[in-house]
Amino acid sequence: MSSVTLGKKVPDFTLPATGVQEISLKQLKGKNVVLYFYPKDSTPGCTTEGQDFRDNYELFRQHNTEILGISRDGIKSHENFKARQGFPFELLSDKDETVCQLFDVIKEKNLYGKKVMGVERSTFLIDAKGVLRQEWRKVKVKEHVQEVLEAVKAL
Image 1 (cartoon, one colour):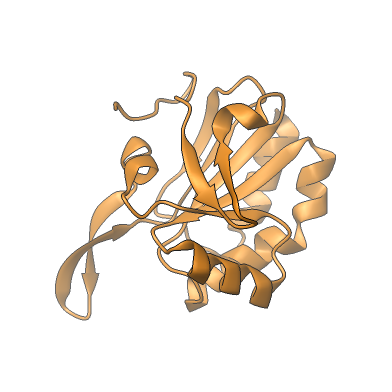
Image 2 (image 1 turned 30 degrees about the vertical axis):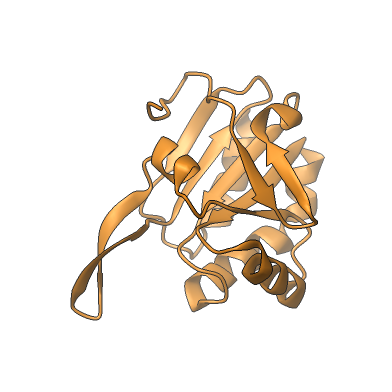
């Protein structure tokens, strides 16, 4: 599988999701989609980012936009994280990193002085026709969701 390119159609994918379901990109055709990749459930930055998307969820919905969070955590962890934080959107589990590889978000990171491979916090905006319109890599959580919302409004 090649990786995604701005201005090009994003290949379809299917992942297990919260709510005992599988979600495919093609199911969301006709809606804008915000895919945000995050390193780990229930960690400080990931919690704050998810809360920001949660708190702005209705504004995204007003602009025909679905939000999906993706990490390598399993569904049980996702269900707990979603319930604790009251997320109105689904979290997808990419344990085998298929979609992470597609979006090229697995990067070498420094964790307590050790080099490890992990998810680089990244967000992608796909329009209603399935075309990648914008990407944010090495995301800093503060004010990020507002920036994504502005990009959605500009579609």
